[in-house]
Image 1: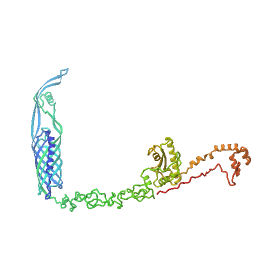
Image 2: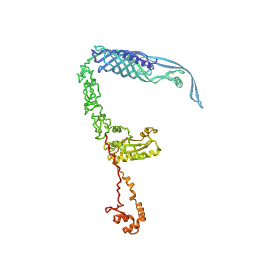
Image 3: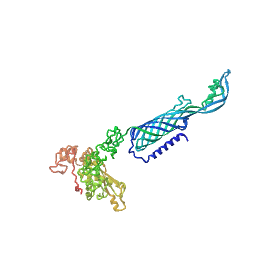
Image 4: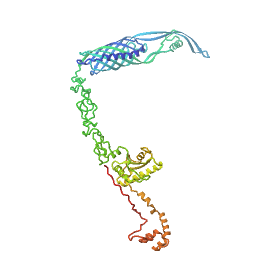
Length: 615
């Protein structure tokens, strides 16, 4: 088995055995721990096989320990491993053959060497190793039976081979990793067992040199006898010392510690001796700093160790075990909460303040309809009391099937205005809302009877007509937030094979599309009026009218009003100042309109259907 493998096995087995031995801790009561310990050390040092030293030799020394607390300590060790033997190899070239090589002028320029006969020699020298090191110990518990781990470093030196003959002696630094177990007697004496791995990096280990015999023969041949002065034989070293390797050197030691110095006294049991304790009356269980004073990491007035909630925000009110309270259960602790009476479920800000975004009297978080318009009546859930309005605000379609149009026409049946007006009140409230307007679509659908193209065009005309009626009737409606769309027969909700199905498909749907824009007033058809009356203001139309008038009535008109031949009818009417045109008798107070001015026509108005307020 290689030594590295044995080292790992020894550390694992030793560590497991020590921790198993500590699985049943003995009470630390009555242990008089002292600041200093002196320990004679006895054990075995087993060097790595690649170090060319004896595999295992005794190790004796002295250890001095400084106990900073029951948990950790520093220590230094000086030990000697006597009786070590360093192995090394030598070789002897006993014979060889050679033949000189000559150039053209018969001068020797080289030699051919063959048939080398060699003999290997193994030697040993006695030596003593010195180990000097220091390490840091951390105890796993503070009971009388204490496992510990250690880490440190030191130096291994071969005392008997200072001149490096043979080469490659130990003179190297090492890292020290170990585990161990201490047993404390009440008097303070300690029995200790530990296992350490001294890890060293050597760069002068022996390695095989296959060219060594040939180099020895060349040295012997060309110097006439070499190092020993005997021709045809020569001593040599079969290895060079340039090998590099990490070495695992295992030290197993046992010791008895003799304590001296003052006894650690810790009146408050915080593991800080009285002489170092700035707070000697710390309560049991409190986590303390290096001078024995309690730590309150979250600054809530309850020390760590007693604080069961050690990440409480600064300023929060806490109980005796350091946990914050939240009396209104809004997620903001008392002491940080500016409103301690928040109803359960209401949304709050970082300071615990609840709010009511739509100002309907129902707090956000409890408000199921957070965009209710100002002044609208709401229920306990903050939603509109009107079922249709609640349906609209929840994003559902309102289907108006009681509204009908004249067959094949966009004209609204008179009996349908009641159903339309019932929904129109909601459209007016929301499209014209100054604070939170909504963009709302009125969609008109037809059944599938007839051509699809005709039904599509019909639905679009009906949608436009319906939008016009709503805007002209409900003056507070936001024209820019009311969208009219015709869908034709493309979205049936029933079968067209029955009258009931066709009636269901002929419907008006109202749906919220998105938040709206600031509402704008309706222009009441100014564009349509200009389009309808544009002929009266068209210059070409005036010319045609004059020509036709002259042809039909020109002579009689001139004779009646005394106009010069060729004058236009329009000119005549402007200049006549008369109370009649042609043979038409006009009332004395009638005035002919000035065709250069705008004409306002009074058209017969349809009776305005009554508005119906929401129930």
